[in-house]
Image (cartoon, rainbow, N blue to C red; front, side, top):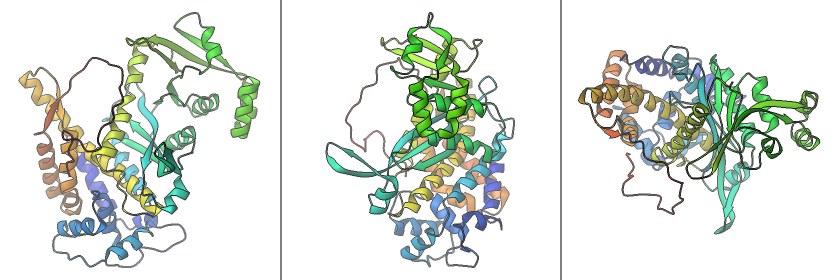
Length: 443
């Protein structure tokens, strides 16, 4: 297989020294990074990307240790002060630039001609400072009435290709639908011009949001809660049919209150045509799905499609528990944005190599005729990548960088796990420790 990620790493390496990069790295109305400093912009960006959840002193020490021949000349306080002048959006910009080549090539895997995206929100732990409590809010429980500082993130994940296309960070009380709109609007920035099919869990299928998707030409698949559009569902004569959702006075009143700009349009429209499917699961519970996909896609196909949404849940687990996503550099809110955006880029770079390694593993294991298909161990892959990422990005010779990347992929291929299709069981919530003996950190 062609290791096309080499080209993307080459482009990223060039971007880090591009004369236009400081303009993306500056906070608005500032002239930061216009003169030489003890720690230039490229070093600061790489140090952010190389974060391993340790103290700032050790993060800096390890960075300069990997940057051979350079002594650590900047203090922790100096580094953190420079970080406060760094625009977090620079990492989102670098992520878009990194993925642009992939999504404008024939490599992109589609589902029946659609780019299959999962969008979902998740609460994340952030440093419990007064600034973060004020900017992001708190989440309380029975043990703490004051609550701990938490932020809400909304990720847009490419299910089949495994990349995070966007992540939004907001106050914990922000509507997930509004963040999902921002996720989808980000596609215009990336320039991805492919038919989009977005998959959502319960909590998203409001009439206003469905109209927003239809207006923007985005196809959808939702799971409905037991009380969603109950009146229309009770009048269904079959388990799979087109339904007209009436824009009643009560429904329009909610839209007028929250989205007055769309209210008049929704009032004139009167109804929304959609397709609702009812499926009974082996556990006896009912799975109700809503989509605008035509009837040539069977109910079984759509049910199987919805289950693919689980990939974004698994990737939140990867970010939080394997990449120390929530271990933020400092207490200031700007570090939250910087570290979260930076780690999304790191994940995409790591996955790009792992994806190629997985394809090689499939070829090798097919020859051996194993009982189960195999794939690389993601936790080990993250550790290996974090270990040598700085060395790879600092290497100026493209040929040498290519050899380092090939060596890294080969090492990833040595650590494999079987993919077993286990029988479905009802989910059980267990109270377990954060650090488990069988899930040790890889770095």
